[in-house]
Length: 137
Image: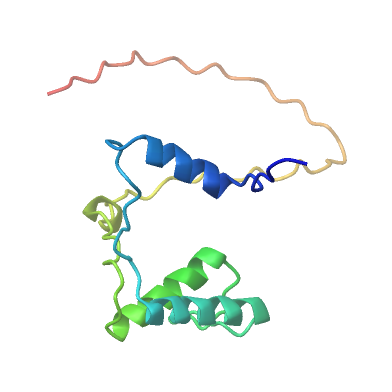
């Protein structure tokens, strides 16, 4: 038999590819967004959510949403001074409440009642008043 070739793997292929391109940028290591303590807080919050023991701060209701559990973990880590990106700010448009005028509700029609004897009524015709156009200023 001849020479034994090493098994092919993706890491070998990528290494050979980048070694052949000297001017190509290599992989860069980016700074971490979250500290180890932050990860622990989020992991703990997710664990509590899974077991049904995670409660929300304001109302005390049980948290079932993964997103809310992550937000609670990040908030706790932020309160302890861990490395966490700042929370997203809510735009002022959604926080201000528009003044609304009370809406008129339509009166509910009652169900027709049965009469013992039908009575004859004559219809009277109302005269239509001319409508005036509303002027805009």
